[in-house]
Length: 257
Image: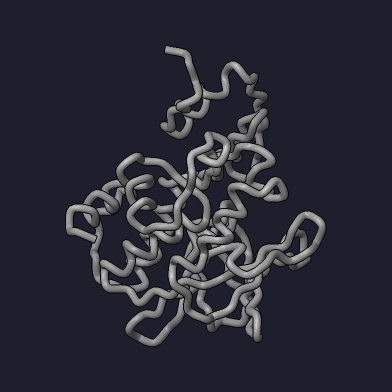
């Protein structure tokens, strides 16, 4: 990645701090990514192909100031981290469905980041409303951040779980086997083209805020502020306007001036 891309990416995140590949840098970049770059599946509904290619991801997220889903967000973030000197491995994750089944390999992309002190961290800026700061991969205890309480269970397949009302819920399974970006291509195609993909069921654009989260679905704007959720109906004729006002993304299908 040429040096100008690094500066433009960091500007997109609003990051002006130290670029040393340290835990402090990783944590700051991870949190800012979630605050500045939305998780969204809009291209799928705008019939714009999503190609598994790092440069395409960078153009969309940095050049076009868009968001994306896991392959795009974590794929671009991994490229940035590597250019800053981090040791990054692409991981394959499997996500539970609404029916309680577990998705196939490459259903999700997460990142393993190794620091110079030997510590290993799970990073993920492409899973929507999940952990806010990187999680210590070798800590078997509870790890708490502003989004909740999490735990990583080791095994042949590692488990990321979160606690809700005293009960642990599986977020996704993953392995530590390293993968190349092109290995995610078939599942990326499935996610955007298969009628069985949940990404085709409806539009979503969501992003963390300093006090909670803002999410736009097909029918409403959901604003969470200090734990209080407010659902605001969005009529179809107002949807494109709300998208642009909230996330700065113009709807190419909108014919309004």
